[in-house]
Image (cartoon, rainbow, N blue to C red):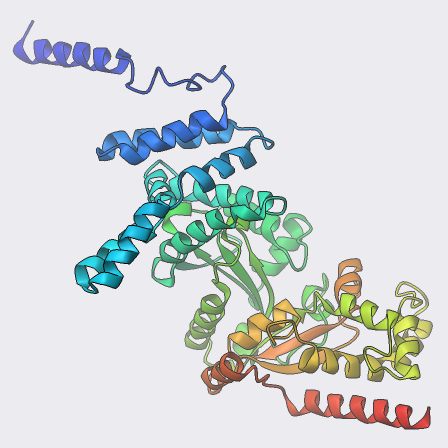
Length: 465
């Protein structure tokens, strides 16, 4: 046998011996796939992970923790979360000592000690779990489970706070990659786009092709290196000559595609967040602004950037004030119009539908203006979540469209209403600052006029009572 053959044989024998040697963690209860896993066993591994100093051994142990977590039943996961909340929280006595030391001797060293001790061990645990293969995506899934468990165990909010704090760093704009989604994008990504679409359901591959393949359609998504080909958020764009009044103008199966060079208006008609475990981590504001920049550079003929947005809380608001018109300061005609909405047969004879719509439209647009300009939550912001998003980004409430979406979902959630928000690059920053600092809503003259007419009608009816 030659020297090199002898060396390779020796390496092979030693390699097999190392591979067959029992792992230092092999005796830990719950490691074997056929044994039941308990939350306390995983918590024990978490403590071992926090005490680990080696990066390689830490990554291996982090993988085992997450593998065992995946084997927990849905019923057992809340118990594990409770252990994380109680056994991996602050050392209260050490925190009091550190605070007392800082009060006694304020300075850099005592402040550093206070900051260090004020971080719960859970955050370091999550950082170490992130060392496992696909650790980031698995922690995102864990947060989804935590958010679900929080509905019954509000005390788990401390876990959500820890992960939210970390995710805002791990998923900040500097790590995000913008990619255009086309009909040539790999099929596994396209399948996710179909599955994640949250505004206007994509009914199979033919429907997706109509949204991606024509020259007047675009789709862009943010990706993160740790989630590879799993999008975080995506926006669908229609290139048109004018802002649309209804979603049918965009999603019609039979339509003549427009040459992109002839379009003057880019319409953001669907924005979908893809990861439930990243709820509350904002990506949409960065996405829209960057897509505006991309489109402006590629298609200089575009002059207007607008949305065609749903009104997901408008239907519920209408029901509430219809039940108590006095609380909403509604006149009799307005209350009657709301009640009549439920009697419109949108699939009935076109002439009957057109007549009902003509009667109800002025009142509905006035109610919509009232809803967007005056209906506020406890924080003084618009009660409509989509409005908070776009107005917070610096958009203007530009046009109210009714009826616009008469699909079952559109009628249930928004009573058929859809809204155009205008992204005017010249005023985005000023609008954002006004909304953030004083809750000022930027609205077009048309919307303000509709609200004035609504108020005038309401006052007139009140005088005639």
